[in-house]
Image (cartoon, rainbow, N blue to C red; front, side, top):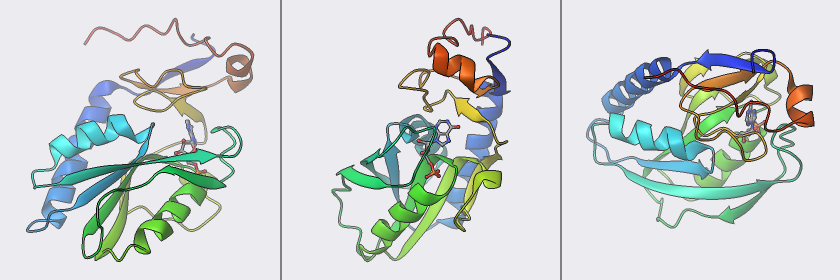
Length: 192
Ligand code: IMP
Protein backbone atom coordinates (compact mmCIF):
# COMPACT_ATOMS: atom_id res chain seq x y z
CA UNK A 1 0.00 0.00 0.00
CA UNK A 2 2.78 2.43 0.93
CA UNK A 3 3.99 2.84 -2.65
CA UNK A 4 0.54 2.86 -4.30
CA UNK A 5 -1.21 5.46 -2.15
CA UNK A 6 -1.31 7.29 1.15
CA UNK A 7 -3.66 9.33 3.28
CA UNK A 8 -4.10 12.84 1.91
CA UNK A 9 -6.93 14.03 4.16
CA UNK A 10 -7.63 11.94 7.22
CA UNK A 11 -11.13 11.48 8.61
CA UNK A 12 -10.54 14.10 11.29
CA UNK A 13 -9.44 16.73 8.73
CA UNK A 14 -12.53 15.89 6.68
CA UNK A 15 -14.84 16.07 9.69
CA UNK A 16 -13.47 19.47 10.70
CA UNK A 17 -13.68 20.92 7.21
CA UNK A 18 -17.20 19.64 6.59
CA UNK A 19 -18.31 21.20 9.89
CA UNK A 20 -16.77 24.53 8.79
CA UNK A 21 -18.48 24.36 5.41
CA UNK A 22 -21.78 23.61 7.16
CA UNK A 23 -21.39 26.66 9.37
CA UNK A 24 -20.53 28.90 6.42
CA UNK A 25 -23.48 27.65 4.38
CA UNK A 26 -25.80 28.04 7.38
CA UNK A 27 -24.70 31.65 7.77
CA UNK A 28 -25.07 32.51 4.10
CA UNK A 29 -28.47 30.84 3.62
CA UNK A 30 -30.04 31.93 6.89
CA UNK A 31 -33.78 32.51 6.46
CA UNK A 32 -33.86 30.32 3.34
CA UNK A 33 -34.52 26.62 2.72
CA UNK A 34 -31.91 25.46 0.22
CA UNK A 35 -32.17 22.36 -1.90
CA UNK A 36 -28.96 20.35 -1.80
CA UNK A 37 -28.56 18.42 -5.05
CA UNK A 38 -25.96 15.71 -5.16
CA UNK A 39 -24.57 13.54 -7.87
CA UNK A 40 -24.57 9.81 -7.22
CA UNK A 41 -22.64 7.92 -6.32
CA UNK A 42 -19.56 9.87 -5.27
CA UNK A 43 -21.33 12.81 -3.64
CA UNK A 44 -23.53 10.73 -1.34
CA UNK A 45 -21.02 10.43 1.50
CA UNK A 46 -20.20 14.14 1.52
CA UNK A 47 -23.88 15.09 1.33
CA UNK A 48 -24.75 12.82 4.25
CA UNK A 49 -22.25 14.62 6.47
CA UNK A 50 -22.74 18.13 5.05
CA UNK A 51 -26.53 18.16 5.41
CA UNK A 52 -26.17 17.37 9.10
CA UNK A 53 -23.71 20.23 9.49
CA UNK A 54 -26.19 22.74 8.01
CA UNK A 55 -28.48 24.11 10.68
CA UNK A 56 -31.37 25.08 8.40
CA UNK A 57 -34.40 23.33 6.95
CA UNK A 58 -32.96 21.73 3.80
CA UNK A 59 -34.30 19.46 1.13
CA UNK A 60 -32.10 17.01 -0.69
CA UNK A 61 -32.31 15.52 -4.13
CA UNK A 62 -30.13 13.32 -6.26
CA UNK A 63 -28.96 13.12 -9.81
CA UNK A 64 -27.15 10.26 -11.47
CA UNK A 65 -25.15 10.68 -14.62
CA UNK A 66 -23.07 8.52 -16.83
CA UNK A 67 -19.90 9.64 -18.45
CA UNK A 68 -18.51 8.29 -21.65
CA UNK A 69 -15.07 7.04 -20.66
CA UNK A 70 -13.53 6.20 -17.28
CA UNK A 71 -14.05 8.52 -14.33
CA UNK A 72 -10.28 8.91 -14.28
CA UNK A 73 -10.41 10.38 -17.75
CA UNK A 74 -13.49 12.51 -16.94
CA UNK A 75 -14.25 13.51 -20.50
CA UNK A 76 -17.19 15.67 -19.56
CA UNK A 77 -19.65 14.07 -21.95
CA UNK A 78 -22.60 13.44 -19.71
CA UNK A 79 -25.97 11.70 -19.86
CA UNK A 80 -28.57 12.18 -17.11
CA UNK A 81 -29.72 8.81 -15.73
CA UNK A 82 -31.64 10.16 -12.72
CA UNK A 83 -33.00 13.68 -12.54
CA UNK A 84 -34.09 15.95 -9.68
CA UNK A 85 -37.75 15.22 -8.90
CA UNK A 86 -38.37 18.52 -7.04
CA UNK A 87 -39.70 21.66 -8.68
CA UNK A 88 -36.69 23.97 -8.47
CA UNK A 89 -38.51 27.11 -9.64
CA UNK A 90 -37.73 29.92 -7.20
CA UNK A 91 -35.56 27.67 -5.00
CA UNK A 92 -32.03 28.22 -3.76
CA UNK A 93 -30.12 25.26 -5.16
CA UNK A 94 -26.73 24.12 -3.95
CA UNK A 95 -25.02 21.54 -6.14
CA UNK A 96 -22.94 19.34 -3.83
CA UNK A 97 -20.05 17.55 -5.53
CA UNK A 98 -17.34 15.26 -4.24
CA UNK A 99 -14.69 16.68 -6.56
CA UNK A 100 -14.36 19.22 -9.33
CA UNK A 101 -11.59 18.25 -11.70
CA UNK A 102 -11.67 19.66 -15.24
CA UNK A 103 -14.96 21.38 -14.37
CA UNK A 104 -16.79 19.95 -17.39
CA UNK A 105 -19.27 17.90 -15.36
CA UNK A 106 -20.07 20.78 -13.00
CA UNK A 107 -20.47 23.22 -15.86
CA UNK A 108 -22.99 20.91 -17.48
CA UNK A 109 -24.91 20.22 -14.25
CA UNK A 110 -24.99 23.89 -13.25
CA UNK A 111 -26.45 24.79 -16.64
CA UNK A 112 -29.10 22.05 -16.28
CA UNK A 113 -30.05 23.29 -12.79
CA UNK A 114 -30.09 26.95 -13.89
CA UNK A 115 -32.48 26.06 -16.70
CA UNK A 116 -35.06 24.94 -14.08
CA UNK A 117 -35.86 28.49 -12.94
CA UNK A 118 -34.06 28.38 -9.58
CA UNK A 119 -33.68 31.63 -7.64
CA UNK A 120 -29.99 30.81 -7.19
CA UNK A 121 -27.63 27.98 -8.09
CA UNK A 122 -24.28 27.63 -6.32
CA UNK A 123 -21.63 24.93 -6.21
CA UNK A 124 -20.11 23.28 -3.14
CA UNK A 125 -17.36 20.73 -3.63
CA UNK A 126 -15.37 18.88 -1.03
CA UNK A 127 -12.28 18.65 -3.22
CA UNK A 128 -11.28 21.27 -5.76
CA UNK A 129 -8.57 20.21 -8.22
CA UNK A 130 -8.00 23.73 -9.46
CA UNK A 131 -4.79 22.84 -11.32
CA UNK A 132 -6.73 20.49 -13.63
CA UNK A 133 -9.42 22.97 -14.60
CA UNK A 134 -10.09 23.42 -18.32
CA UNK A 135 -13.30 25.47 -18.00
CA UNK A 136 -13.78 28.43 -15.65
CA UNK A 137 -15.73 26.89 -12.77
CA UNK A 138 -15.24 28.56 -9.39
CA UNK A 139 -17.09 26.74 -6.60
CA UNK A 140 -18.56 29.14 -4.05
CA UNK A 141 -17.70 26.59 -1.34
CA UNK A 142 -14.68 24.25 -1.50
CA UNK A 143 -13.37 21.99 1.23
CA UNK A 144 -9.80 21.43 0.10
CA UNK A 145 -7.67 22.61 -2.81
CA UNK A 146 -6.69 19.15 -4.02
CA UNK A 147 -3.28 18.39 -5.60
CA UNK A 148 -3.06 16.99 -9.10
CA UNK A 149 -3.33 13.33 -8.09
CA UNK A 150 -6.04 10.74 -8.36
CA UNK A 151 -7.82 10.37 -5.04
CA UNK A 152 -10.13 7.73 -3.57
CA UNK A 153 -12.20 7.31 -0.43
CA UNK A 154 -15.05 9.21 1.25
CA UNK A 155 -17.31 8.50 -1.73
CA UNK A 156 -14.65 8.66 -4.43
CA UNK A 157 -13.91 5.46 -6.29
CA UNK A 158 -11.47 3.73 -8.52
CA UNK A 159 -13.53 1.31 -10.61
CA UNK A 160 -16.24 1.26 -7.91
CA UNK A 161 -13.80 0.42 -5.15
CA UNK A 162 -12.87 2.42 -2.04
CA UNK A 163 -15.97 4.62 -1.73
CA UNK A 164 -16.38 3.44 1.86
CA UNK A 165 -12.94 4.47 3.09
CA UNK A 166 -13.33 7.05 5.86
CA UNK A 167 -10.08 8.78 4.83
CA UNK A 168 -9.23 10.31 1.45
CA UNK A 169 -6.21 8.62 -0.13
CA UNK A 170 -3.93 10.04 -2.76
CA UNK A 171 -2.89 7.49 -5.37
CA UNK A 172 0.85 7.83 -5.99
CA UNK A 173 1.13 5.01 -8.50
CA UNK A 174 -1.92 5.00 -10.75
CA UNK A 175 -0.30 2.53 -13.14
CA UNK A 176 0.02 0.02 -10.29
CA UNK A 177 -3.63 0.56 -9.34
CA UNK A 178 -4.72 0.11 -12.96
CA UNK A 179 -2.76 -3.13 -13.10
CA UNK A 180 -4.25 -4.29 -9.79
CA UNK A 181 -7.43 -2.35 -8.86
CA UNK A 182 -7.43 -4.04 -5.45
CA UNK A 183 -3.93 -2.82 -4.61
CA UNK A 184 -5.27 -0.47 -1.94
CA UNK A 185 -7.58 -2.94 -0.25
CA UNK A 186 -4.88 -3.76 2.26
CA UNK A 187 -5.05 -0.13 3.37
CA UNK A 188 -5.83 -0.39 7.05
CA UNK A 189 -7.31 2.80 8.46
CA UNK A 190 -5.90 3.69 11.85
CA UNK A 191 -8.25 3.08 14.74
CA UNK A 192 -10.46 6.11 15.42
P1 IMP B 1 -14.69 16.79 -14.17
O1 IMP B 1 -15.84 16.82 -15.10
O2 IMP B 1 -13.38 16.60 -14.88
O3 IMP B 1 -14.64 17.97 -13.22
O4 IMP B 1 -14.79 15.46 -13.34
C1 IMP B 1 -15.59 15.31 -12.27
C2 IMP B 1 -15.76 13.84 -11.99
O5 IMP B 1 -14.63 13.04 -12.35
C3 IMP B 1 -15.94 13.65 -10.52
O6 IMP B 1 -17.29 13.81 -10.14
C4 IMP B 1 -15.43 12.24 -10.31
O7 IMP B 1 -16.45 11.31 -10.55
C5 IMP B 1 -14.37 12.07 -11.37
N1 IMP B 1 -13.04 12.32 -10.80
C6 IMP B 1 -12.20 13.33 -11.11
N2 IMP B 1 -11.07 13.25 -10.40
C7 IMP B 1 -11.20 12.17 -9.61
C8 IMP B 1 -10.35 11.56 -8.62
O8 IMP B 1 -9.23 12.01 -8.31
N3 IMP B 1 -10.83 10.44 -8.01
C9 IMP B 1 -12.05 9.92 -8.31
N4 IMP B 1 -12.87 10.45 -9.22
C10 IMP B 1 -12.46 11.57 -9.86
